[in-house]
Length: 185
Image (tube, rainbow, N blue to C red; front, side):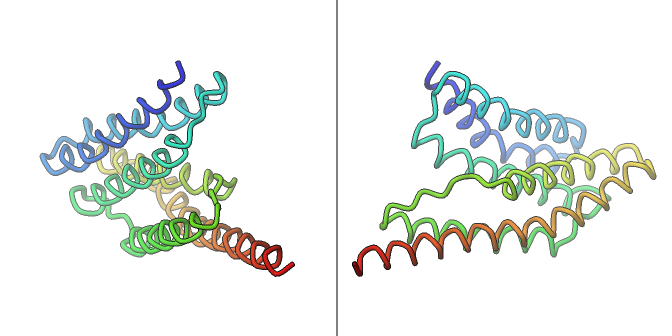
């Protein structure tokens, strides 16, 4: 049972590009369903890891990477291959934030820093997933209600991308400052 969460995460990592491939082939329904299953698998692997105390260092590294890839391929899919266009600003903000997070984490790892998921990060992942999924649904079903949900989730996602980026950056800076203060003593 200890390896099940990592296996689910690896599946999400491997299958995420297929969201884009299916959208490219014009199979938006299949792409939307695959995206939804993979997005839900994030909650499942985390719940299993906590329930069975099967959290691993590998899982802590792979899970955020799998999330980032899934969201990237999902946003790219609805931006390029559907009639509903995600904001390129959202996609660019996400990519820029994630590049800084990964670079900062790699730098701080040398000092023993292991970033923990934050409430802002989890909320960002949720709203980005909602944005992608409703983007697919709006494209498929042309509902004003779905369009409103899409617009709202896109706006909230953009705000949360910024807030979570600042939150993670502040945690990294605080860690580094505390590390420097301790070493000066």
